[in-house]
Image (cartoon, rainbow, N blue to C red):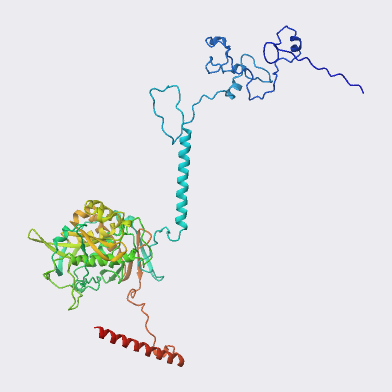
Length: 588
C-alpha cells in the first residue's frame, strides 16, 4: 500500500503585527501568504458578530471626510463606528460602501438612558450637575422598598387568614334581614311598588283642621337643657304607661268615623312610616282595612312600629342573635324603654297638669296614664276625601306668655365602637359632628320623629342623648345632653320634603281606595327597597293561631300506673308549693 506524502504548508511569519501578513507584501513571506484565499478571515465568525478592528485609534477624528460615507446617522467621528466594515453576503469582507440593512440589525453600543422607575424616588434637579450626564438610579433602594412592600402584603394576608380561621374572632357578616310578618301561601300579592317611584311624587295639602284635643300634659323642666356629659343625670324608671292603641281600636276615631268626618283614618306613627318609607332598611308592615267607603290604616300587635329602630341606616351591621344585647331586636326594646322613661323624667313633677277637652281614650278608671295628649287633625286630600290622624304631644312649656307644645324623644348610645363617635368626648364640643353621625346611622328614625312633630304641629322637638353607664350594661343609663329644634328647620337640615311626604301618602291612599272591601297588608321587603300589598283573609292577625284544648272525651287517657305516679307527683308538688307560700308569708 502506497502512502502519499503529506505536505505541510508553509506558516507565514508576520513581523509587522499579529495575524496573516498582507498579501500585497513582496517580502519572503509573501509567497506563502499568496497561497491564502483572498477575503477569507482567519477565524470563523457568525453573521451576528462584527468583523474588523476593535477600535481605530489612528483615524483622524478631526477630518470626517477621511471616513468613507456609509449613510449612517451616527457621529462620523465616533471611533467605535464600524458600519463601513460590516459583513457582506458571501462571508466576505464588505466593500467601502457597507450594507445599511445589515448594519441596522447590529448594535454595538447602547446609547439609551436607563429606564426610570415608576414608583421610585423622583430625580432632583441639581444645578451643579452636568446636564448631559443622566442621574444615577438607586436600584438598591428601589429593590429594598419592593421587598418591604412584599413583606407587608404577606403580613396582612397572614393576619386575614388567621382571623378567618380563628373561631373566637370570626368576622361579623352582614345580618340577613327577615320579614316583619310571615307571608302565607294563600296570600295574594296585588301590588309591588319600588321606592324609586316615591322620590318623584309631590302633593300639596292645605292647612289641617283641629277636631279634638284629648289628655293632659305636664310642663317641661328647663334644667335639663343645661345637662352636659360632665354633669349627667341618671335615667329613672317610671310606672306610668302610655296607651297607644291602633287606629281601629281608638274610641274617638270610631266615633269620628260614625259621624262621617273623614274617609281615611290613621295615626301619626303609621303616617310617618309611610312618609319616610324610602329611608327605611328594616322590614315593617301595616294592616289596611277597607270597610265600605272608609279606609283604616292599622298596626299589628307586636309590630315593629311599637319599637324604635337602632342603627338602621348604618353601614356597620349588628349581631343577628336575638339574645345578644346589641342585636337589632334587643336594641329596639331598649330604645323604646329609654324613650318612654326619658319623656317622663324631663317633666316638672309637681302634680300640675294641663287638661284638655276629653281624657285619653281606651284608659280604664284608676289607671295612671303618662303625660300625653292626642290631637285629632283633619287634612283635605281631595274634594270628597279627607284624612283624620291622631297625633301625639308629650309636654308643654310657656314661652313669651304663650303655650307651646313639645315632642320628647331620645337617642341612645350603646357602644362607641359601633357608632364611631364617643358622645362623652364629642357631645360638649362637637354637637354638630355627633348629630351628623346619628343622621347617618339613624336617619329613618330621626325623619319619622320630625314627620310626627310636623303632623302634630309641635312648636319644638326635644331630642335627648342617653348612653349606657357601661357598654355591656343595658339596664342602667345616663342622660348626657338635651337639644331642641324647630320641626320645620330640622326637616330642612335632614332634607325632608313635606310635599314629597304627602305625595307618598296620597298615592298609597288612591291605590287602596281602588281595592274592594277586605283586609290587606302592606309589607316592606326585607332585602329590597320596595313595598308589597297582599290580600289576606278577614280573620288574619286575630289570635286564630292559639291552640285550644281538646274535649275530655277526645283526650288520650293515661294508663292506671302512670295515673297513680302522676297523682303522687302532683301531690308532692302541691305540698312544696304550699310550703313555699307559707315561707313567703312568714317573711312578709
